[in-house]
Every structure is written in structure tokens, then in C-alpha cells.
Amino acid sequence: MSDSLREPWLRGIAFNPAAPSDVLVRLLDRAAGEAGLLMCESRDLPDAVVDAVVRHPAVVIRAAFARNQYVDPAQLAPLATDPSGIVRAWLAGGSRHYPRRVRPLPNDVLVTLLTAQDGGEDGKVTAHEIIAELTSSRQIPLSFFRSMAGRAHPELRVQATWRWESLTPTQRAALLDDPEPAVRAAAQDRNWALDPERVEARLPSFGSRNAWVFGGCALSPALVERGFADGMVRSMARNPHTPASAVARLAHHPEAEVRELVAARPDLRPDLVAQLRQDPDEDVRTRARLHAFPRTWAEYEVIDRVVGHGPDCVCPISEPFTGSPVEPDVGPSADWFTACAVSGEAVLRRVAASWPGLSAELVATLAQDDDEEVRIRLACHHPLAQPRLLLEVFVTRPAHRPHLLDLPAFPRTGWAHLIDHPDPEVRALAAADPALAAPPVRDPDDSVCRAAAGNPSLPPEVLEELLADPRTAEGAAANTSLPVPRMHVLLDHCLNATATPPAVAEPREGSRM
Image 1 (cartoon, one colour):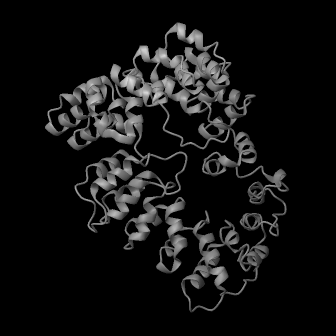
Image 2 (image 1 turned 30 degrees about the vertical axis):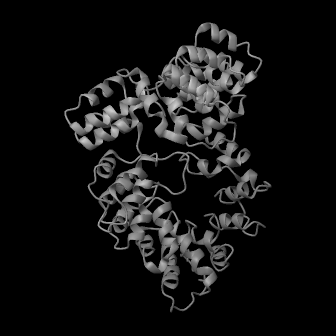
Image 3 (image 1 turned 120 degrees about the horizontal axis):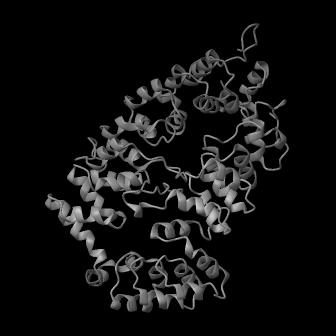
């Protein structure tokens, strides 16, 4: 067997959707090398393979699986108590590819990781380092953060104080009066940010992080003057705690960007709103026109995430706000997003398109919107976005392609008309379309050839020829029409260095081998 075929065959079989459990388990063999690790990390796996992975003696196998974003998250639960701290840390850190949308971990896994007393038997990492990985991974849903303040475990209530500003007044009061001394102390320590005098006293200790203080803490008159003197005006323009007198000064600031940030503040005086609607800067005027919509700071933040980002924005897609009849300040209501969807302001329609709870009727309307950014945001954010729209955005906006390819609704057929497209990424999708009459297995671009070799419409004799060609071997090994016995034969030769190189199988009557 040629060395040039071994790795392509292994990778192809590892990602073949039709490969059964007994085939995939063989790739857990050390001889499979990188292909086995990639399989554990980067695809959905049958239950039998998952069971084999979580019990596998090799740490590298379990660690690779810990970063898997494709299996049911509940299947990762055993790794939260893995003997190896490295495995736990990789689970806490999430995918290494930084997807735009991160799937949250189940609550029981989060509790296990956040309350662990040690960092694993191997002593490679500490429990605190694992928690740090988790809190920065975006795998903790907002609902869990909000529930931590009422959890029975004191350590979770302590950690709830880390997001003090996101807690409701009722939750903050309960933590300040918690029966556990450690929780009370943590709450009192975090509560300093809402006391202007304590903020002023602690400011010198923050050094280069002063922008965070001026952007989120209660500000005394002396701190306001310090902020203006030190150029912290943008931070103060966003800060919900900035005093009204300072907001008025910021509304007259010479920098248009500062006035723009002030223009949509929900606490802005009506006279300042009227003034900024006549501002010489177009962006300031636009934000001032939006003022009627952000009645709460949560709504202001939602709009702020969208304004000025452009059609190729690939910022992380955070968990959507959900309204609450009990705590109205949790997030904007469905009615608010609906109002945005029918607004004459394109910015507000972009906001609505970014909310996955929008009704199917409004989704259909926004899919036809004249504003391209509305359509792009709808494609990237809403689960009901039509395949036609996903295809359109994939073709026209390459920046969004990695995200779109991971969406369940992304179309795998209907691409045949794009087989001659000048962009090889587009041709590769078209080459894999099962409806294609003649997959272009000799395209000038290697990625298109691999995709064409994976097309299940290929006849068996052609598939065998492609398996023997290093340029197409990976795609052919990933082809769902490849017979399972043939997969085993290929693995026999890949995992056994002394085996006789496999011959190209001749098609037999009644068989696809």
C-alpha cells in the first residue's frame, strides 16, 4: 500500500456518515493516529462508539472527545469526572475551533465541574484552572448563571456573585443576606461596584483596566471628572450608571462616536433625543431615531450588538435573550422583537433577524428584505431560515461559510446549477450534490475533486478507481455508497503495516464491492 493512500483512507472512513460502529471503533486504535483523534472531536458518533471512547484507556482519545460539539451534550457527562484533569479541562474549554455559536453543557456537567474539589489524578491542572476554562468558554447558558444564585451548593452561590450586574435586585439582596459567611463575603465584595465611594477608593488598584470601571460601575462626581480628563468618554457613554449630568455633557461631545453611543440610551432626556436627531453625523441621527425602541438596558445592548457591524460580521452568536414575566429586566420580550421586525429602520429589522424566536411568518417576510444584512443575519441566526436563503448567503458571503455549513438546515442538494461557479468552495458543494449527473472528479481544484469523489451517485467501478488515486482517495473513502466490507478491508491495510497492499476490487454481480 502506498503511504500516500493511508492517511486519506483513514480520514475518509473516519468521516463517512455511513460507517457503522464496528468500523469507527477500529479507528480508536493507536495506529489510526490523527484520523482517530479527528473523528472523536469533529463528528457525531453512534452510541456504541461513544461508550468505547469514554472508557478508552488513552487520555488523548478521551480529551479529543471532550471537545466534540456534534454529539448529544449528555454523552459528554462522564468526562466531567474523568480521572485526568487534562480531559476535564478540555471539556471545560470547549471546541478549539471557536465556533460562532457554542452549544451549552448540561446543568449536571456544569455543577460537577464548578464544584470539583480537585483537578484530576494526574495533577496537570487545578480545579480553579478548569473553572477558568469553563467560564470563558461560553458553554454556560444564561439560564444557569441566573439559577446559580439560588443553588443549594454554597460554592455555586459564590460564583453567582462573579456576574453581579447580571443578577436581579432580588437575587443580589438574597446573596448579601446569605446564611453562608463565604457567600455573604463574596456578595459584599462584588457589591462595591454599585457604591460610587467604594469605586473611587478602589480605582487606583485597577491600573489599565480603568475602562472597565468607567464602563460598568457607579460613578461619583469626582470619578466623572476623572473620566473626562482621562479620555474614558466612550466607556461612560455606555455605562448605565453614568449620572444624568454627565450624559448631557456626553451628548454634546465633539466626537461623533461618543454622541452616537449616547443617542440610544434608554435614560436619555427627551430634549437631548430631539437634539441628536438633528445631529450633523448620520450615524448619530440613526441611533437617535432608534431611541423609541430601547426602553430597557437589555434592549439597548441588543441593538448595540448589531449597529455598525457590517454584512461580514462573524462575532460570536451569544445565547438569545428571553423575556420573563417574573423578572422583566432579564431581556427584551417577544413583542419587542416583533415590533423591530416590522420597523422601517433596517437596523431594527437586523436586530429582529438575529433573534431565533421570531415567528415563521416574520421569517418569511425578512427573507425577502431589501437590506442584505437583514437576510444575512436571518440565515446565520434563525433555525427557520429557508435553505434557499442559506445557499444564497453561502455563495455571496464567504466569511459566513464555516458557520452555515454546521447548520442542520443547510442544503446538501440543489447545487447542480453552480457546478461551473468560479469559486472552488461553491463548486465543491455542487460536486457533492447527489442529483448531479456527472460529478467533476477531475476538476482543477483538489477540494472539488475530493467532494466529487464523495458523491454517492458514482458507480462502484469509478469509486474504486478514485480510491486508488491520492487526489481523490479521501473523498472516495468518505462516500456513503462505499460497502462496509470494503471499509474493513481498507482499515486492515491501514492499521496493519505488514499487510499486502490491497488490489483494486473488481465489481461483482450483485455486489457493490
